[in-house]
Structures are given as C-alpha cells and as structure tokens.
Image (cartoon, rainbow, N blue to C red; front, side):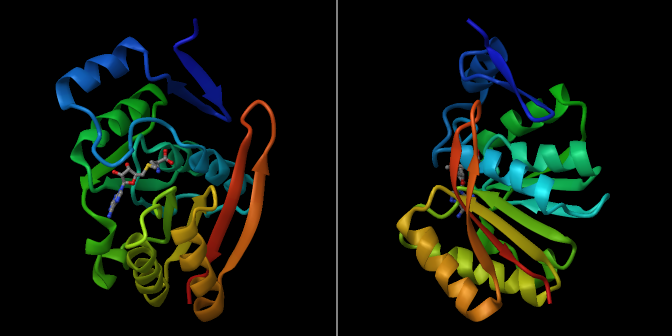
Amino acid sequence: MATSRQIFDLTILNHRHRDMRALRRTHGLPSHHGNKLWRSSVLLMDYLQEFPISQGARVLEVGCGWGLAGIYSAKVFDAQVTCSDLDASVLPFADHHAFINQVTITTLQKGYQKFTGADLAHFDVLMGGDICFWDEQASLVYNLVRRAQKNGVRTIIADPGRTPYAEMALRACDKLGAMCDPWFVPHPHNARGYILDVPAV
Ligand SMILES: C[S@@+](CC[C@H](N)C(=O)[O-])C[C@H]1O[C@@H](n2cnc3c(N)ncnc32)[C@H](O)[C@@H]1O
C-alpha cells in the first residue's frame, strides 16, 4: 500500500510512512489535531493557483500542522515561509515535509493570538487551513486578521465551514472588506469548503 502521495507539486507522506512513525515516536502525538494534512490546506493550494501571491512573498502560516500550505508557497512562489503552530510537536512534521520537497522554511512554536501587529508587519501574507474550530477561536482569529490588515498583510484562511469560522468570516466580510467564497477541488483531492481572503490596506 502506498505510503506517500502527490498533491499538486508536493510529495506528502501518509500517516503510516516509516518517517512519520519515527517522528511520532520521538515527538509524541499532536495535542490540537495537527496529526495529518487537512483538506483545507488543499483548498488553499488550489486557491493560490487562481489567486496567487507574489514571487518571493514573505508568508506566515499559522496553525500549520504539517505546514503544507506554507511549503507549497515556498515551492511554487519561492516564498520566504514561516510555519507556526501552538503545538511544538507538529513542527518536526513540517520540517520533514519541507526537506523531502526540497524547500527551506522556518518553524516557530507560537499561538496565533500571540502575534502582535509589529510581528505581522514582517510578512506580506498570512495563511491558515482549518484553524477556527472551537467557539473561542472565532474572536482570536478575527482579531489576528484585523491586526494583519492594519499592518499591510493579506490574509487567506480556508475551512470546511465550521460554525466558529462562519462567524469569524461574516464579521471579516462586514468590517474588513473581505471576500468569502465556497471552494471545491475535484477528484482525486475531493476537498470542499470556503476561502476567506482579506485584503491588506
Ligand atoms: C485542524 S489542524 C490543521 C492543520 C493544518 N493547517 C492543515 O490544514 O493540515 C489545526 C492546527 O491548528 C493548531 N492550532 C490550534 N489552535 C491554535 C492556536 N491558538 N494558535 C496556533 N495554532 C493553533 C493545531 O495545533 C493544529 O496543528
């Protein structure tokens, strides 16, 4: 049975690949669901093909898990990518995927609510896939997006359409001039959900 797959230009190891098993043994199990590639990251990759970022853009991926949206940005747009997550145990999985896909990323353990306006001003694009799933995250993510916009950063967030995300996205459309569109990536990826794109000001 295959232990890796190709999604767009990336090689992605499956959960049972021996490298993934070795990383789990060394770093333990993720605490906040960062245990695999979530389909929202596939939505992000597909969306970036249609609405790209600039070559060499400075990208911050938050709630990165295995970091594949950021890694895709490094591979396709030669972006300078920082992949961050609250949960330190996911970062070696992101580093390993960057290695096998022959790109360089920086990893950082940090909750997204901790990024200040001054931190965000170092980036051009903020992105995240499936990072707004608990009720309390709706206002944390909205405030992050608002700080990003105030500091000249475009934000792109994908989600399957969970209630906290919908609440956050509606507020961003109402107050920040954001667009939120349904998005679908057909077979063989079969990813479906929404993309919120908040312009920089
Ligand atoms: C559902 S997973 C999605 C992972 C990845 N973005 C993807 O699409 O495959 C949610 C991720 O968000 C992270 N996370 C949850 N709350 C967070 C917070 N407050 N700050 C940063 N990361 C957070 C989790 O550790 C986990 O890696």
